[in-house]
Amino acid sequence: MKNNILKFSCALIVTFLVSGCNDEFLERYPLDQITNETFWNTENDLAVYNNSLYNLVRNDVAVPILMGHTDGFNSHFGNIWAQDEFSDNMAPREPRHVRFQQVRAGKHNVPSNPEWFGYQGWNFIRAINVGLANYDRADIPQATINKYAGEARLFRGWFYGEKVQKFGDVPFVERELNIDSEELYAARTPRAEAMQKVLEDLTFAAENLPADWGDGNAPGRLNRWAALLVKARICLYEGTWNKYHGAGDSQMWLEEAAKAAKEVMDNGPYRLYMTGHPESDYNAYHRILDLTGNPEVMAWRKYKLGVFTNHIQAYFGYTGGATKSLVEDYLCTDGLPITLSPLYKGDETFEDVFENRDPRLRQTILHPDDTDIYRYDREDGRTYPRLAGNPGGGFKTTTGYHIIKHYNADDMIGKAYNTAESPAIILRFAEVLLTYAEAKAELGTITQADLDASINKLRDRVAMPHLMLGNVPVDPRYTADGITPLIAEIRRERRIELFMEGHRYKDLKRWKQGKKLEIPDMGMRWSEANKARFSPTTMETSIDPVSGKEYIDVYKGTDWANPVFDESKHYLWPIPLNTLAQNPAIEQNPGWD
Image 1 (cartoon, rainbow, N blue to C red):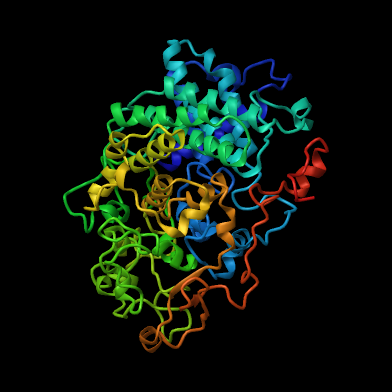
Image 2: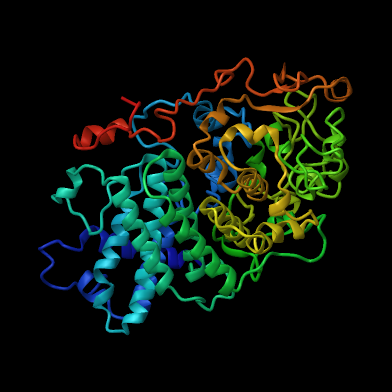
């Protein structure tokens, strides 16, 4: 919302309309307050009501779709950057991040109440359905009404798509409920049926939202192109879930994903951010405060002092650091994985890791020589990397791999608690390209032209060799995954490009690759050179069973030292006990009884 007055107005609208729309005693219209009978008249009424939806969706913990950064103390976990902590990309040890560690290790239990990003947010759906039931009251053109209905249905489809990904069957509700509504005590809607409704919502949104709200790519309303990307994202998930889990039709979903992505590629106004500097273009725009007009950013959340702020930069150290698994997935500059490339120098010293590698590695993980360039940790003058237990202050990691993809020193130096303004990129064009390539590859219809229009554009930005259909490397680390080398490379590209943007955990689930989470998280090589340089540390080490070399073992000696992934239950999260108690018709997900 643009300012506090608008937020207050939106809150009033939701309070009066959502909580009291159908009360029978409202036979006369109060003259001093908003009522359902007097409100829905103009386009401005519909716009203001939908502003209230944007206000509700700002609660990322309860409605985790338009993920940004939660303000205040909850900035430490309620943000898009932290979502990779559920996966093998990041390795937190901070006690406040136990929830991430539990899920990552497969040690989470059935909660009594909804937990972070869990089975909650249903008031948001009620607010959406109230709007959808009343937009037609306005005496304005139907196309105008459909713009706002499309906005609401985009939110509803996105919300339910996310809930299906976590919980499977969902209570899909399409009308306003009251205390005596029978839907309150109904069973969950089966996944296949719910997802058809999700597809209908997202298709309606993509067909009726305007291509441009006239906001100059300000962090305002979601447009048609955003709806197409959300549709492509959710269809790709469902298509690959169905394919790899044997759960139903995959072709239709993958075709819808490819079609939606191609529409954005062919007709949308977006393009990759490129200035001809491959050594900096990848992370340059991730580290600035104002993304207005950026050609790649399709939706973002702005933070401004006095309006809405966060503390995300200062709290980011809670995420632990990037993992050895992630770092080893970056290709060498010849386009080959480290298992095949003669250019790979190994990891005997910390600097060796960066030699002859995809430039995105050095734009994601802090190289010691770049400490001054990034003015790392408030320009404290210390040398980095630093491990937990190293003497003195400064930012410390569990792995040695400090993440700098997002880092903005100006948003930390001299700023008081919760006055930071780092934005959150919610949707960007790079995901469109990755989604298109993956959907086409999964359909078995991908061509070299498709790769050149998608994956190879991402590689061009960082001056990496093209992926060629006739010369796809075969990384021995992925030959047991049951996929083609081409799909393995597209998945690798996705992991690298979208690191720390909230996708990895969901990707592993839809690909039915949860067993990768049983591999313990490791950090930097604990070679003789690194021991002399980075000791003492409280981090323990172990021998990597694959290479026979010693590495930081992040969770050794903790409750998360031996991660498990039970394929009979861990692909879905459990339903909270209070939900089961309130509605006996809802059954617990398999394996969680």
